[in-house]
Amino acid sequence: MTENKKFKRRATVRVLEERCKGCWYCVNYCPTKVLVVSEKLNSKGYHPPEFAENIEENKVCIACHLCELYCPDFAIVVEELK
Amino acid sequence: MSIMEDLRREEEKLLRTERLPHVWCPGCGIGIVLNAFLRSVLRRNMDPNKLVVVSGIGCTGRAAGYVNVDSFHTTHGRAIPFAVGIKFARPDLNVVVFSGDGDLFAIGGNHFINAARRNHDLLIIAVNNFTYGMTGGQHGPTTPTGAYTTTTPYGNPDRPFNIPHLAISLGAPYVARWTTYHVNQLQNSIHKALGMKGFRVIEIISQCPTVYGRRNYMRSPLSMMEYFQKNSIVKNDATFEEMELTYNGKIVVGEFRSVEDIPTYEERYEDIIRRAQNEGGD
Image 1 (cartoon, rainbow over the protein chains, first blue to last red):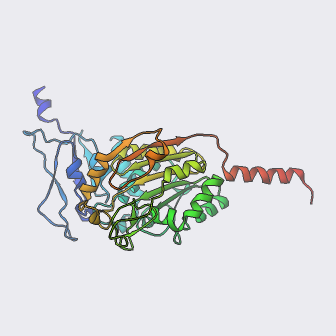
Image 2: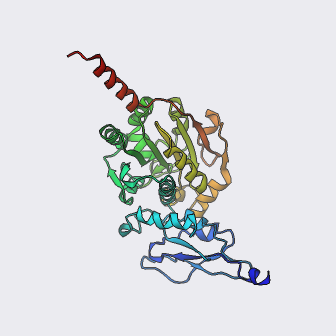
């Protein structure tokens, strides 16, 4: 039980950074807030989101795929973990 | 491998990925609608070779360039006539018109009305962003009364089109309206409409932060999305007055009409051809 609870995350988010245009719908609509605006820039000058999980603060990806659905630029791929 | 992961992988094959990133502005809702449309096509297990996407001119008109199926980028306002022609020549194809409000209801308004009246077998995905985005934000036939645009700096005096009511009055068998905030409902609605016959109209209220939101106190993509989130009400049996869009008012969304068994124009035409051949005579 403790083991399971520690590794509760079920997916990871891959951002195709060159497609991102920095609208941050994904950052805003993530129910567990695992995405943050990153410091880096892509070639068009936008700040793409970054996958930043924090297990202590319960910020873990629950594989709801909402960021994928909201992304207008087809820039997000959610990869589920088995 | 989950279903959602499969959808995402297959979706990439339906996109012309070499053209991405697309031309739409940061936060534009057309990408969300295209995403929902491609996912619905995949969920229907449709053959991409039997799907045609037709679009007109404008921001939404660019959608035809990004789908990796047979697609037409037609002249301004004439997306529906082109689609009708394709349907007549090849009745086995699924024809989808993916276009914007300025294209379908301003210059193409008459085509929309008459195609709906005849009940052509087409799926109309009408992305309504309240304005002419590509040309710089002029007011259009769907701009709400009182909205500020480049051509109406003191507020728009016109009344906007009530698109679902217009489509229902012309007897369209499937009429729905969603906003880009309702991503799952939108996807389910397109999925359902793809399986039906007749003139199906889905109006999607989309955000245009660059030229509409900027002049109407919604400067960021997120603030426009927040407006949809706070002001939309799902009501499937909405009355004509409720469906009307008002400036910064409530947006009534839902599936307003869904009926089966209305004969399409193509079916009636085939019937006439059969009758004429049976009667013979020369």
